[in-house]
Image (cartoon, rainbow, N blue to C red; front, side, top):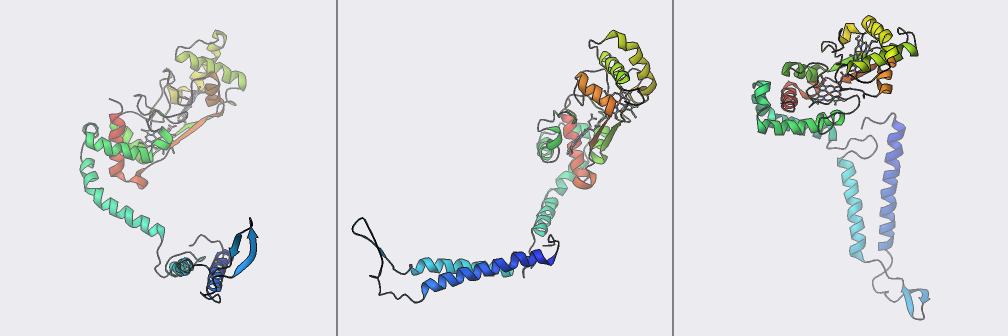
Length: 299
Ligand code: HEC
Ligand code: HEC
């Protein structure tokens, strides 16, 4: 119980807990003693509806004993397990340790299986139905929060089954994306482009790259600016560059949404999508299986 910032909070919990238990014991014991068994006819003097009399009988012993048992149980528990402030309990049991033991057991059990998968080529492993069922569960646990349980993504989180890749769709590239993570750095261009007008012009040009209807008056200025500021990453024709994760701007697939406003925002303010690396967290065996799973979603 290292969560307490100082000893005060430990006592703040321990003292009321002990006092509470003592108060319960006092109450129960007080009710047990004194009133003998024979005095069954004593009443409180309360009478309702003419003949309903309230008796003052002692509480049944079996019922009071149940309370005593719970009190004794509570005391034993607090001696053995953590519960009284920062006192760790004589068994030194911790949930964190239990978790680690169970994880280690699972690791021992599944390690040989994952090791076998690890030796299989990604494209081949993607066709192994049993392996992919395991991989699907891994995806649900570790990836679906961001990419969706169907892997179709959301705004800012790429669709992993449309065959369109910012960082390359080769099985090896997919695997290194998952192992090491990726950070897509798109700087904001409002200032270099000379403010809103410049961003407007380039937005029109970017929209025209995917064949959308645009304001023709702005195209030329937009194109000039694009050739000056953007081709270093997105390429002369706007088809992108997987080495820096710059998306293809000529298809109709958008990481941040295809509306004029969201493209304008991408250009003016910039974007910084981050795919966390999973190597130290999941280990290479699981990442290998997950990479094969992503390959299997893109036949
Ligand atoms: C330093 C490299 C670099 C330069 C230069 C650059 N971009 Fe980008 N751009 C990126 C990256 C990387 C992303 C993806 C960001 C992410 O993954 O979060 C991106 C994303 C975008 C997007 C969003 C695409 C989508 O699918 O939602 C647009 C639009 C865009 N850039 C337009 C431009 C324009 C216009 C310029 C020039 C003014 C430009 N970029 C210059 C690297 C660059
Ligand atoms: C915290 C959110 C998050 C989690 C968890 C996450 N990802 Fe990602 N992932 C992203 C983001 C954001 C990107 C896009 C990075 C960028 O902007 O370029 C991405 C990109 C990718 C890409 C590259 C897509 C492309 O177009 O090249 C792959 C492949 C991928 N993720 C697979 C996975 C797998 C498999 C898992 C589970 C182990 C996973 N991701 C877990 C957020 C996440």
